[in-house]
Length: 351
Ligand code: NAP
Figure 1 (cartoon, rainbow, N blue to C red):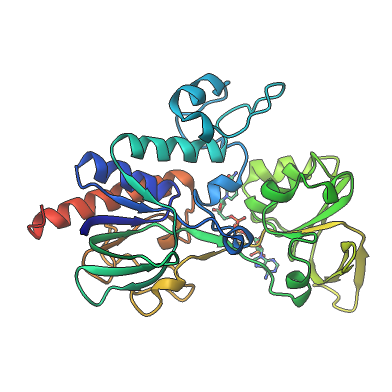
Figure 2 (cartoon, rainbow, N blue to C red):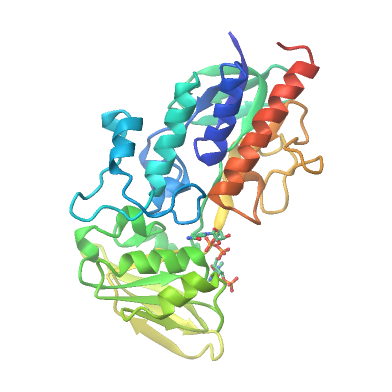
């Protein structure tokens, strides 16, 4: 069977495109990603980057309030993310928001496949997709909403200590026993670095932020929260030279180097290192098939539309946006891609 619309990706862009195309009775198939160790390490498990965050304070429609009863009524019991009854989150969390979006799409008839697309042939129509699980799927219209993943610095010592104290996701790994009551370090100066550092203060005895400049990139509200926290200390004008440790203990420290005086180094004794230095779009499986910018983000080819360089292929969310990168903008462009695909199919006579 040739699918009318296939949506690749299961973040806010993917589910919003699914809600719109399902309500348009296009019977969309959402390929939501595979649950593999490789995807866990890369941060590309189903439900995307929001599933790796804590409270989401800036998604409209969710002011502070206890959402526990609502979540229990909206979601299947097995898919309600855990909430500490003694200390419930003050608003919606990323994993909860994603489960709600997924459920909303399913309620309108969207179908899901828990698998990764590893190869795409967009040179023929219908488009042909091959999955990690060995399936071949053909589609009349495609919405790419595969998002982006966190970057690492690329140090050999980062590779060596992955899963042994090196992480790019404080929310996923921060509560592990190895990090409890120990000093930790976060590298980066953006909102992610602030968010990760603040989250880690719950467990760590101290959190260093290592930033290469003397000014943060983060939004003022996040920067002020981090800089005002008694457990956080910023090492300005510094880069990570190497992560130190051994096979038995994992990470035991980092050597940082001054960007002002490169001869000056300092060792910070830490039990964990968290990278928060930006993102790379998940477009490897589309290389050579679609126009992308120099960083690998898919190019939108018509102003104000989600069209790409291949007719019938639309892109939504962070995979095509290295500028706003917000949950709400991803959902917005997911809606646009759903409508663009629906209208394109109708215009081509594919009912
Ligand atoms: P970002 O804003 O691009 O910041 C990346 C940071 O990493 C920058 O400070 C950058 O330094 C540093 N960096 C990059 N490459 C580096 C390298 N090789 N060595 C050392 N430092 C390096 O990325 P982000 O913080 O992940 O945020 C991405 C988007 O998500 C933003 O739009 C942000 O607002 C949003 N976001 C929002 C929230 C929130 O509102 N709660 C939370 C997380 C993310 P320079 O500053 O020197 O370039």
